[in-house]
Amino acid sequence: MVKRQLPNPRDVFEYVQLKKPSFNGKARRLQDALTIADLRAIAKRRTPKAAFDYTDGAAEGELSILRARQAFEDIEFHPDILRPAENVDTSTQILGGPSALPFGIAPTGFTRLMQTEGETAGAGAAGAAGIPFTLSTLGTTSIEDVVKANPDGRNWFQLYVLRDREVSYGLVRRAAAAGFDTLHFTVDTPVAGNRMRDYRNGFSIPPQLTLRTVIDTLPRPWWWFDFLTTPKLEFASLTSTGGTVGDLIGQAMDPTISYEDLATIREMWPGKIVIKGVQNVPDAVKLIDLGVDGLVLSNHGGRQLDRAPIPFHLLPQVVREVGRDATVMIDTGIMNGADIVASVALGAKFTLIGRAYLYGLMAGGRAGVDRTIAILRSEIERTMKLLGVQSLEELEPRHVTQLTRVAPVSLAYGHAAEAAASKAAPKAAPVRTPRATTPKPAAKRAESTAARTAGTPGTTPLDAAKESSDAVGAADRAVEG
Image (cartoon, rainbow, N blue to C red; front, side, top):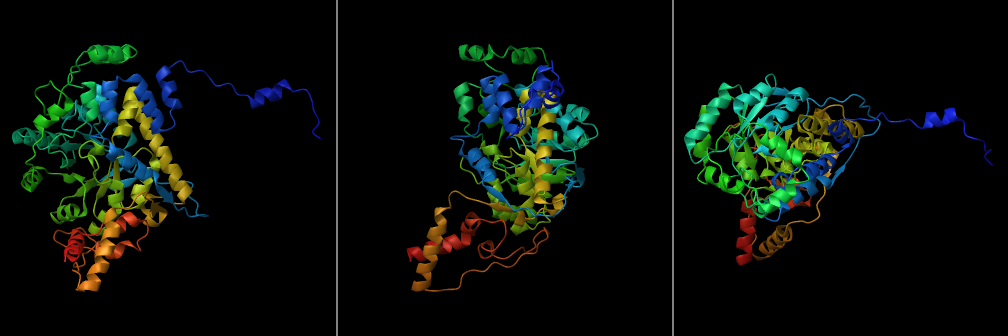
């Protein structure tokens, strides 16, 4: 039996350490935030509903963003044991330059409306962390002011092709003259997505004061104080305001955007050019054959076409087709450093964060963005150490398995159709010419996706289900026959 005694006051003070109080409310809030979800909760408390929902929401029923986040949750890591990884190297080379971490800040529109420091906070934090910052065509800070905020870092520019082509051309020239080294040519926004939260909130630029707006603002006077006592919002491409955000985007975007526009911009732009918004394998192959410098697999954060493909699920297929030497990047749904590690393991050269950055911005301005980057850095380093890898180059598909909750109906249908066709009238299936693994224009790349998928590490039944359109068409003809 343990012998009892009166507690020694000295022993009590050794066990109980008093935490030094912090009188800086913002610093205390941010320090207590341990995850991106924590930053989101703070942002929701401190931001009016319309502005928060513009950031947090997506199109239609918001299925795309929910599925994208679920895809990252539905992974299984396979760590190596007894492999020391005390000091991990998170740096990488991307598009001809360095990045201290395998992620950068994605382009976001109307950013100063969420918090008045806006893109200045994002660019400054990115520069301090040694990662790229991307300015949106619909940004609220000018190209030149972003350079002032991040003079020694890497700045990228995201381009929408507007109805008035000369406006787009002028932005391209300004970004090049300012020293931006990479252009993100965005292809998934010919028209505005149906963002239901914005309509329900009556969200417009500038904000319209209604009884509901006033009631929502009363508990958040600091937001209106910041908004009303800082410079007027400025847009990089829009010269008029009024109406919902969707209306403004609809006026600016052009559904006639085509490969001819890409050729024109490619000729104008002196730096690297990547295509943002790629959502299928054939488009990825065609673009690499055309000689673009990289791809961003993205469904625009679920804010355009709801039920669009999940970029993380698409990633292994694109990497198999265009080769690991191609610069394949990914965004949409990233909320944890482990999501970034999994993406790199499956072949992504780089990732981009959008909402995660904005949650930090709304939670605490520049300091909040710094906190976002610190959280993700810590999660990346810890995940790499637990996997037993010391550098990003050591990450491989074998480290990750993508799990799925559902499989496409076409899987069962395709197998049934093949069986019926083989019994009725067997005939040779079309065979694709093998392609090389290097992204040379017009080069041939890997064998049939369907034939390779089953035995490839890091793949799932979803990969096997997504066969080429030729194979599906052959099945249709067999069933009809």
